[in-house]
Length: 201
Image (tube, rainbow, N blue to C red):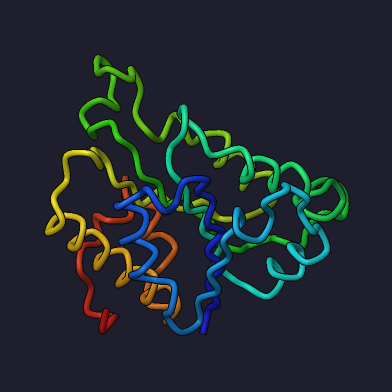
């Protein structure tokens, strides 16, 4: 069974209703390693050797974070800068992550309609995730569409419950090897899979 590594980065997790519900849906699933970067590295002193070992032990990598200023919180950027080293993750001889799957799971205060041409944020969310996609490409990884929770300030508990359950079902499906790569890459958002029959979540 594929093993899932969730690299969670949220500097204000206790104040995030949406991310808290997403975390609760996946943190205790079998075959999932939930790794809270801000809890582990409050001083930003990332243990590169440990992080590389974690990456090697897993098949699917999830960058889970709030969408801060069209990107990720600083510790996740620090993690990428330090851990994905030349000659290990990319470049000559840098094939250690080749063929692993990776995606972003993000939450944003902006509504989905704000992330489109002509919307408040001018461009689709996928355009803002291009640096992550290019990072995956350089590392020989397969980049999946994001699971994106938009408009978090206006979502009720029932809506968040549904999205969290959907997220849990998708992660469980990934852990069970229930999805084909081409099936996932044909989507705009991972949540378009909806509730699946591959999970008891």
